[in-house]
Length: 294
Ligand SMILES: *[C@@H]1O[C@H](CO)[C@@H](O)[C@H](O)[C@H]1NC(C)=O
Ligand SMILES: *[C@@H]1O[C@H](CO)[C@@H](O)[C@H](O)[C@H]1NC(C)=O
Ligand SMILES: *[C@@H]1O[C@H](CO)[C@@H](O)[C@H](O)[C@H]1NC(C)=O
Ligand SMILES: *[C@@H]1O[C@H](CO)[C@@H](O)[C@H](O)[C@H]1NC(C)=O
Image (tube, rainbow, N blue to C red):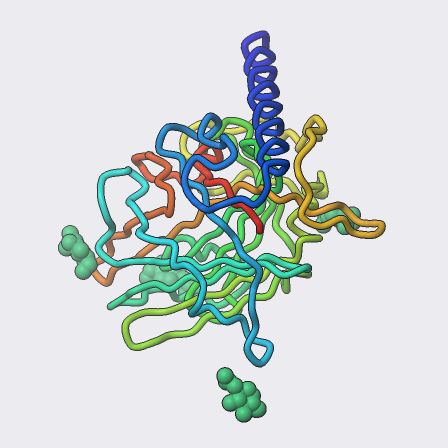
C-alpha cells in the first residue's frame, strides 16, 4: 500500500513537471515536431517516441491520407527486430474526432471472425489504444479492426498494473456509438480506418456492472474488479474548449498494434512502440507514445 502511494505521488510529480514543461512550451511559441518534445520521455523511457497528430484535410469528404506522415516501422512486441510484414499508421484529427488509418502488408489475410466484439484478436487484426492527457493511463480505450467489415472490437480497459495480468474491460455497444470503422483489401494486403469521436475518447466512465476480466490476461486472476478511479486533476493544455462538454487536451497517450496471423498457424505481434514483452502483451500503457494534437 505504502509503495503504491509513493509511486502515485512520484507519478503526480512527474505529471506536474510535464504540465509545467507543456505550459512553458506553449508560451515559447510554435512547436516543432521531433523526439523529446515537451519532456514526455521522462514518463515513457529513454527511447520514447512522440507523434504529431495534425488537422485532417478532406477531399470530397474523405480524409486525404496520402499527405499525412506514415508512422512506421512496427517492431515485434518482444522488441527483437522487425515483423515479417510491414504495418504503417497515419493519424489526424478534426474538431470532433481522431482519425486513424492502418495499412498492413499481407500475403495471407487470416481472420474468419465476422461480428462486432467477437475475439477478433486471435487472428489478423490491427489495434489502437488511446487515452487523453500526458500521464501513463490506467484507463484507456481499445479499438480493434479485423480485415472483415463489421468485425471490430471496442472496449474501455482498466489496467491497474501496466501489464496484461489483472486488466478488465468494459465492452462498448455494437454498433459502437461514436466510432466509425472501415476496412478493405488491396493487392498486397489490407487497410483499416477507425474514426473515434472525442466525446467517446474523453469519457473514461465505464458502467461498473460491465467490467469483466479480459481473456487475454496472462497468469493471475482478478478476484475483485476495481472500477476506474478518477485521476487527480492535472493542468493540461487544451486543444479545444467546448461549450458544455469536456475540453479536448492537446496531449494524449496512444499505441498502435498489429496481430499478423499466418497460414502456417504462427502469429506475429508488433507495435509502433514495442511493449518489450514476451509472450506478447500489448497492454503496457507506460509504453504508449505521446500524441501531440496540433
Ligand atoms: C470530387 O468529386 C467530384 C464530383 O463527384 C469529382 O468530379 C472530383 O473528381 C472528385 N475529386 C477527387 C480528388 O476525387
Ligand atoms: C475461426 O477459425 C479457427 C481456427 O480454424 C476456429 O477455431 C474458430 O472457431 C473459427 N471462428 C469462427 C468465428 O468461425
Ligand atoms: C460515458 O460513457 C458511459 C458508458 O457508456 C455512459 O453511460 C455515459 O453517459 C457517458 N458520459 C458522457 C458524459 O457522455
Ligand atoms: C510461418 O509463415 C511466416 C510467414 O510466411 C514465416 O515468416 C514463418 O517463418 C513461418 N513459420 C513456420 C514455423 O513455418
